[in-house]
Length: 238
Image (cartoon, rainbow, N blue to C red; front, side, top):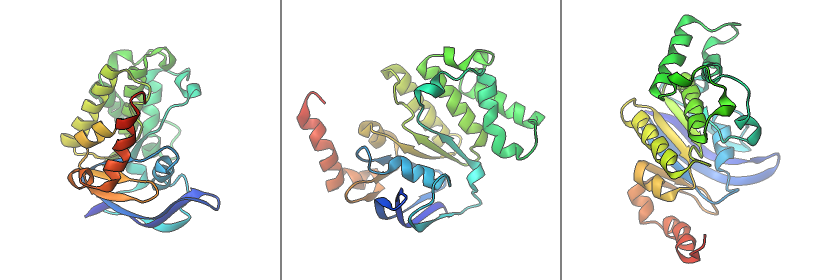
């Protein structure tokens, strides 16, 4: 059964439409990579899935017992957020807010969950460190650990390797692949890294003037893929 079904979605701001008539579905255990040009509506789609924006038209259905409070989210960071003066433990534990509801404190189980996710991301030794003192790769691990505190079955990632050096980016991809393959988390990831998308994803959603949704094998044979890759191959200097 599909965890997420999007039917005839129209997305945008106020009355300004960015995406029209978008339909796709995501099943449990899928690794969906969302690609497309800047401004094509990828982040708007993710925020609409999370309920942070309302669609201009169409509908989003959650199935297989999934609720929005069970979806973990790793957004793109702003410069202000990178300088946030809180400890690693405080930030990771804040991912349990969707579980704690109106309680003014975290339960022992939620604290254990935060500790387990810090250990999983190999940042438990940094728990008392100030977040803004960390490297970019360490900060992304902290934010991923935070997202995992909410993610019971689905994880949404918006450009998770943005600003990372090649070594840190490769490690982040390895971690995400492990969460999908070994922990069974459904992954929806926005990426400009088409090579990584084709390496790791099981399905591709391409948003642009026209849309594509299918397996990565189907995407490789599509005009969408050839048209998306061709400018990069011909520009030389990027």
